[in-house]
Image 1: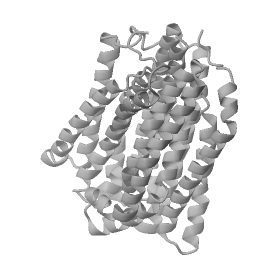
Image 2: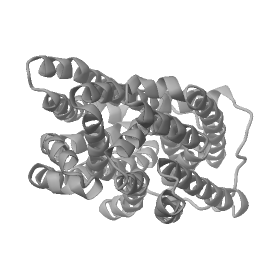
Image 3: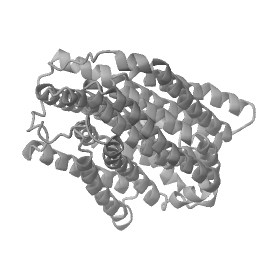
Image 4: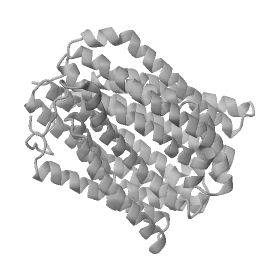
Length: 451
């Protein structure tokens, strides 16, 4: 098929590494958008960071919803390519884009219209809330760009061409890094400047994807972006992508509750610690997610081609690579968390509080990578429900654990421990679950619609 790479033959380690590196780099670029905003806004003050951070949780929720079609593309298009069915690959690509556009418009309108009551959940000071509402409304209008770019990325990943999204996202990041200080400090727009910089950058990323896919027709010989939805393709996409979107969206709701609890226990410093610490912790998350996404794309093609030996070797190889990085992140966060946090928020009170968060979360980093890597194995075979069950159950367990730890006098540290403990649980349960059903996965025939 035009513009695609065959992942069912050739050296496994090389293919995984070549596929994972651009995906991982792209994940870091997406993380860097928020970190760049945080780093520059942090120079304004911790209240500005709290305003942007409160919206950051909603941005995370938006990214979670966009996973419906990103993962839907990676698996459905990838399995169609593995089955050598170009017609189905094009149809799945068109359906994912159409569905993504419809969902993004509805979600953006919802956030824009209800920005004020949503931000009021955090019970922030009046001036912080005003900034947060303005920031959210600007960001919400860029969500169609974000959703469609995520879907385009999924299509490229499924085709084994992860370098293209990396290059395009890199251009967007460079633009954001230039516009942030320009709009925030030169134009004196403050937090609004950070929102505008992100909007312009995301719009440019979308235009570049549009040019590559629509006008250069570099993938699958071109395909229609908007199509009349057919049940057989739409059903398969929702079957694959919806559990992923739900688990990540519900995770965002948990984080909203944790954010409010952190605000009650530690004021705006508590909320800032949770949001900024989570962004820094994404170093581990994005690394493992890069390898997990690469593993999922690799498994999708090989599962459709019934290459079981390659599937197991790929999983073991990916675990080996992610475990090394997870160990390094654990050491960094536990022993140098305060220093890392101070890079983004240099206020003494802020980075001292952040150091406590980083140390406690550091203990769970290796288990986090174990969970996310195993997710890639499940996703590649089209089984997105087991990871959803594990994540939703353990993530919601954080709420009673946090309330319990706070009630027994652990204070805000109890919230951080509830996050760390449940992350450890997710890694252990996910690996055990896959081990138990591994034989069944490898012997079950592919049921995807590819005709």
